[in-house]
Image (cartoon, rainbow, N blue to C red; front, side, top):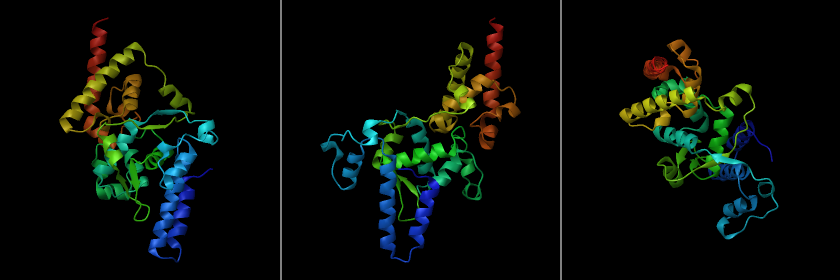
Length: 275
C-alpha cells in the first residue's frame, strides 16, 4: 500500500468539498486517519486492525503472515526528534498542523511563521538537517503510535496525547523506522569523529548544556547532536562559515553564533598550545 502527502491532501480535499453533513465529514476524516495509521504501523497489521475495531492487540499474537511480520522494519530510537516535535507542538499552542510544525523546525520564514513570531522560538531551524519528508513521516508515525493526536475533523491541528506528554518528559522511548541515508553528504555526516573532533564535540555539548540551563529549555532545542557534530568537523571560525552549518538558522546565528565560535577558537588554541 503506497501513499504520499499529496494523496492525503487530495483525499482530505474531496472529503471537505463533499456535499454532506459535518458529522459525515468528521467520520470520513477519522477513517482516513485510521488508514494512515494502518499504513504507518511498524508491527503486525492484524494487531493494528484489531485495535481499530476496539480489541486489545496485546491479547493476540502477531499473525506471522503480513509484510510487517515477514519483513519487520528496522527500528531505531527516534525519541530526540520526537521530543523536538512534541515540544514545538506544545509551545505553539497545540493548534497547528504538520506542515507548519515542519516549516518551523526547518527554519522557514513563511508568512504564518513570521505573523505568529514562531521564528523567535528556540526550535526554529533546529531540525534543518532533516528533510521535509523525514519530518512528515515521523509525525505520521507519531500519530499512528498514539503520541500525537491529529484533529482530522477540525482544522488539522496536532496535540499531545497522554503518551506524548510522557515521552516529552523522558518517561518512555519512541522507536521509528530507520531512515536510509542515500546522499554522499549524509553518509559522510554519519561517519565516526576523529579523536580531535570528539574532544571539540564534548566542549560544544557542555556549552549547549550551559545555554539550555540558562534558558530553561531542553539542550536539543539549542542545537541538535548532528549540528554539533558538523561543527566539530567543519570547525567554523567566523559567522559566515558558522552560518553554513546545517541546523543554524538566522535566529540561532544571531543568538548563539559568537558564543560557539569563541568556544571553538579557545579549544583550538588550547589544543595547539599543548602540542
